[in-house]
Length: 316
Image (cartoon, rainbow, N blue to C red):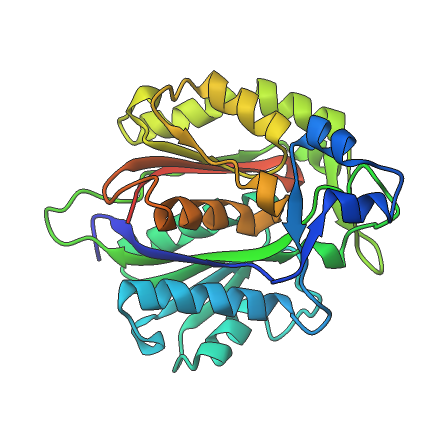
């Protein structure tokens, strides 16, 4: 058992193929100007038919393990947050474990759509604290292109594919916890505002109600997540919100009051990658040196189910 856990390394992966706004303008009735002014996205990456979700997840996981100086055998829990697994079994976590040659970890998938990674991170933190895991690999991976309605110009311009991963380990005795207490919840009666339903499944949303909820209800919740770690918003070095839409991220970040923080804007380059968006954006901030070891970073996921989960973590 540990009194706390911390993220010791992160990693990310995106498919090679870029889909620009100009490309989209040739597919549906839209334009670069329309997309940029409404959602702030310039480009996104799209996985090919031969690149399943577990492949994206496996690449990100391998990078995080390498950065942590660990082998696949060192991990005893794999949690993959995804809502775009087409098969029910084997689950993504089992497939990632098989890809990486892990000997026998507990392997579970967690579907909380866009809030999936922060829920998965909390779950891994709880498992390490309870003593049921010693080292966990937490991955957010989604292939939104596979569930997009490419004829709906209001949603297809949003989506991208990718994966991000974090290695979670127990803190040494006396060491301060590097993953703060989670604040999580949902708005069940508004669950239909974001949907991936049907056969084949298709992504749809009520954009205006999601926008109103995110910009009015979430700032107070994000501030509460800070308070649970004993911090105030000005203490934060970075804010990594779910990369839904730049027009949601910017007002939400401003209302949180994190005046000294770098605000992740990876949505501009990557689009909305659902559960992958937070670890992808966090890993890029670390890779570019925009945050340094020990910096307090607010992670806050929100979206499908109208679920949310947030916690303050220390930069690896």
